[in-house]
Image (cartoon, rainbow, N blue to C red; front, side, top):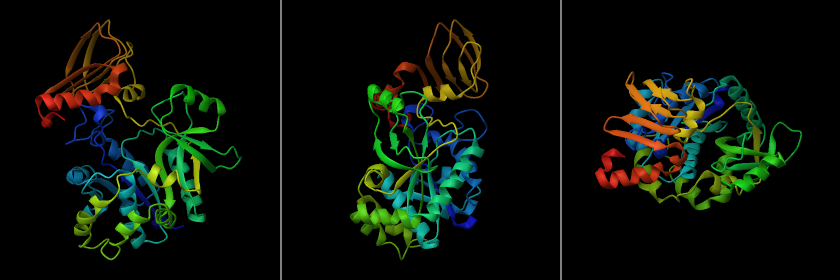
Length: 359
């Protein structure tokens, strides 16, 4: 496998509504510096993948409304490396579309598909794991994912059950979507379950063959464009045909059906940064156990809070425990961390009451 055979697809089309008001439909969380590090989440993801994949082989899959945001934040890439969806159709259609584009360019390609908004601290371990997966997929007709060793019975993640073999790469037995607490506890006790991180690795030949077998209609739809992919005619074809694709995830469309799915237990810490609480967990804390981004804070009888403002804003907090405090332009959110899953509903109420521009 040559270095030029390695490709990456960064999934950057989501809105991240549970991070409202920081994340909005106009400016989602992947384009924010959520941790106050100086780089946005998509910039971190790009740099992490760039350790293995040449710059020119990294593509960004996003909604067409974020085209310019991607190019502004990733000036290293060309406009042709931004693959835009004219309609939201979940992950299976966009992965097939990108795979066919890459396959036309390089039939020997192996590719990683990764979300743009995850946080991985040990990038050396991630790169090592990714290289092992690239090698395995280049040598065998398999579909791979990186699984995360569970640290507690989380009911918000999907789980992967694997065969208890001594092999580094393990055969997947089944996927389970977001189990209840008792089921999640039993998974941890069994010892052969991993969290599904949504990071996938395969050769373009293997993934397109899987689509041929399990998603015949979708494959027929997108293969009509083989002659125009990577040409000026591609945009018109996609505008016309993409909205006709089924709205289905890659998990349901392919991975839960295929028999050649394998998992590599990850050797790195991982956080999907899906909620303000998950961001709180990753950040350093003050003596009062408050997590602070950008703000200058004076706290009295206040602990366990997630506080984020514009740079250097002074925030005085008295008597609050375990709250999310986010100040952004015309919106101030003060909300209990234990109810963070309800922020989507709060956003809906705000936009209905005050206008879509606040969402």
